[in-house]
Image (cartoon, rainbow, N blue to C red; front, top):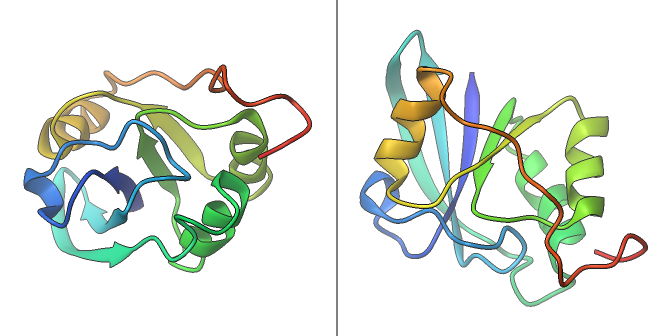
Length: 121
C-alpha cells in the first residue's frame, strides 16, 4: 500500500493531519507492508497556492498512491481520487494515530468541504 497524508508541517509521522487537502503545505508519502511503514518521506505540496484541491490531486498522484488520509477535501478532488482508484479517509489528529487507525479499519470517508461548490475545486 502506498499512502499519502496531508501534513500541517514537515514533521512527518509526528505531524498533525492537515484540515484541508488542497491547502496543506506538505504530504507524507508512506509505503506500508502488512501493518508496518517500510519507508516514508515528506514532500512539499507544490500546488498549495496554485489552484487548490484538484491541482493538488494531480500533484500527489505522481507518487502512485493507493490511499489518502486528509482532514477535509472538496467534492471534485474526491471524485478525481475515486476515478484514479485511490481510497480516501478523513481524520483529525496525529498522523501516526491516523495510520494506526487506518490499518485497524477504524477510519471513515470524507464529506465534501462545505466551502466548495460541486462545480469547483
